[in-house]
Length: 395
Image (cartoon, rainbow, N blue to C red; front, side, top):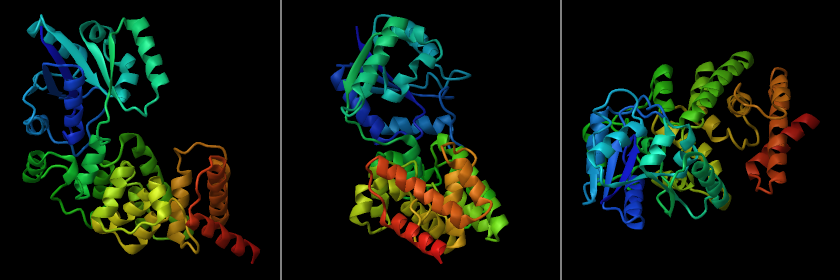
């Protein structure tokens, strides 16, 4: 009886985080083989508009796994019509290998959503659910989910502590467009992407029309963030129209303001290194704020945006003293676009109709109060912005 791991996904693209996870699963579960199975139509998420077709993803996955002698890349889901349901794949594999034991390999995000999958009871009956997690993950939450699945589905669950690389396919696609993905991909995969001009790697993205800029940039976001980005762009354009700013600059800054938001802290720092950006100690301690600074550089270097657009992106999170009209508009559009819902947002929207400075003052005050209540550091530029507004109010 062989122990076979099943590692599915869109592999869009397959990156070194995938390969490290496969190595860890193989070792810690004593697997004889691992099947890497690219999905034709992933049921849990929609492929982005810049995703290559299934044949490219299959070819890249084979290149990525070429150094793993125990790994086999299967086209089982690519040959089947419709959504790529794991339950159907397992049925087929059980018929093909009736005497073997299957382990369904996944991360914590998939584990927590497992109950919502297509026929999870069939999956649980046919495979051990093997969950890779970091030591820093919430053990109590993991155990509670495991107990619920055991009681409800009689699931067999195996936890595998795995300090895998913290890359997502979303962030790798973004880093490819930003020309900073060399460390995240097998050289053969990177070469394949270059030769086939995938993920905008060889495209000239400068001076795009707004519609094309919107189409390209939205591909580089976590899909959950797309409504916010569109809302910010639309709100910025409306505010620019009301206050006499350049509407084109406003909507372009709005659509690009979070262009690097999908990157984690490590990737933000990598981007800073790639573009020779000098950071102070506060920025290194608070890498979550870096997306505004890196976003401005990507807007300039990759998309060829003008200085006004780039400066508005740079200051959209912290603000600064003596903000110009477009900078105020992007700061407020990000804060109060229609998808935002928090105490005070309606008052912020009301003030924006009367005075950008009054709305900006309220926004900065709310942000700083929240940071103080959470015992978080406050950026010096935010403090300077608030002092500047207070002096204007007094005068």
